[in-house]
Amino acid sequence: CGWHLSWGTHTVPSEYGDYHNWSELFHLLNHTYTYCEFSLDENVKRVILFILYLVIFVVGLVENLLVIWVNWQTRGNKSLVNLYIINMAIADLGVLLSLPIWMLEVMLDYTWLWGSFLCRFTHYFYFANMYASIFFLTCLSVDRYVTLTSSSLFWRRHQHRARHVVCACSWVLAAAIPFLEVAHMQLVNTGEPICIFMAPFETYDEWALAVSLATTTIGFLIPFPIIAVFNVLTARFVRRTKPESRKHCLLIYAYIGVFLLSWLPFHVVLTLLTLEGNHIVLHCTFAHLLYFFYDIIDCFTLLHCVINPILYNFLSKNFRSKLISAVVKYIPKDHGGQKGADNSSSSTQHSIVIPPRSDPHPAPSCGVGVHDLPHHGCFCTPKLFLTPSPAHGTAW
Image (cartoon, rainbow, N blue to C red; front, side, top):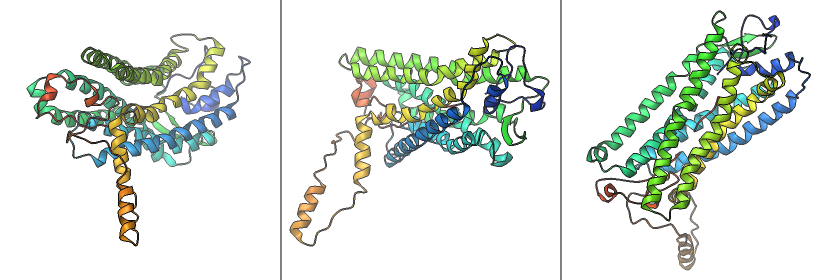
């Protein structure tokens, strides 16, 4: 994402050359545009960013690895939304794996030490996984509602094939979109090497506006209404068919709220910074604050990598049951020397209570399990397999 780096009638000073930079050089602008007599400490910001990156990386890495591992143990089961959630966890994991380089870059004052290839590839890998996470979350919202409410025989017969096709198309689309920006990522030497977006000089304003609007449209304006509408419809269906399921409805509404809080501030700031200068004029102090806090706001979009596994997996009793079962398999058994000790040990080992499953196909771990939701007519059909499922976004 990027925009014209100007402030009112002031433009990027000539000491930076003919290139126009993006978020990586905002810290330079904070030192350049000092006529507002407004001072903010860049060193403090870098420390805060590093801590946020580190916490999100460690917690998100553990959560998403557990989601992938547990659902891989039950991969043989045909589930309601398992495919979407496991792909979303993989995409979130891809976003998180980019963070170590961002952490080092921030602590090195945005100096890039990893060469031209990684300058482009790291940005591409990050953005592709970010979009994929958003797409899978959107598909999950639609699929869950359709499966709960549809009694179509055609859907029951072709739902699993359709999910595979949708997931494949989501990955292809997510892989194609970042080329719009990454094609112009370059390593520039301005005393120290910096990985930046080199927008075409003659058409910079048009480029900046096009890329920023595309980011907001594809990453928020299209997916958010879909996520909101289908989750609201799902909550109403659940409340209508199972009036006592207020807790489940609140969880469904939480899906909407988390996506909104994760992405809305970022896209609002992105749009304002894109339009500032040529299209709108912001107060100097306000513009300075937007530029300064942009990196931190951008960092908070990464919280979806931490919250998604919780909402769509760990809050599900079925997922927690599968997690316990998977862990128990790897607990070493204590074999005593005496038969009595063996029997006692065996009895102790088997005293761990695992919730029984009368249904050979367990409920989906998507926050609201299928067995937690009211059954529609099609749920009683033995040919329909409704089973487990796992876990964005996102961030730019």
